Image 1: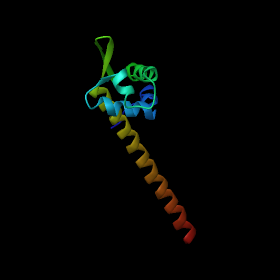
Image 2 (image 1 turned 120 degrees about the vertical axis):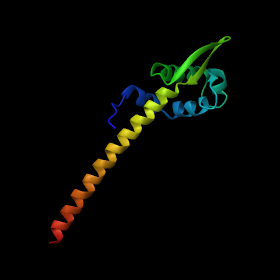
Image 3 (image 1 turned 90 degrees about the horizontal axis):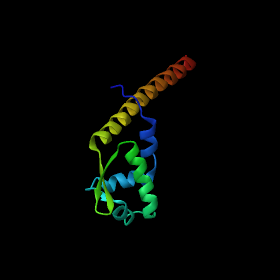
Image 4 (image 1 turned 90 degrees about the vertical axis):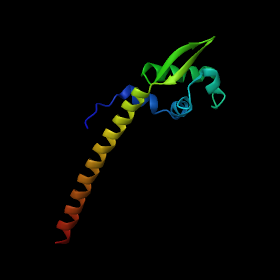
Length: 111
């Protein structure tokens, strides 16, 4: 599986606060206010983080009274998981090659 890595997407999920927000949103969505009740940051900071997640497509926004309700876009999240899997697979292959090279060098030095 060869997946192009989306740097903006990974910058967005690279932040621990945004990952925590995604965890909270996966339980059923929420508003900036409801999320701020579970995070050690202000409602305004939550809103800014939600803006980042929205820009990369990880959340959908729906008007909800005077606020906006956010829900995780599961297709985009699946895309992020596929990218992570692809990157992990590529690094596993690289590390196996490095190990084989190191073993070959060690073996040649023992002879």
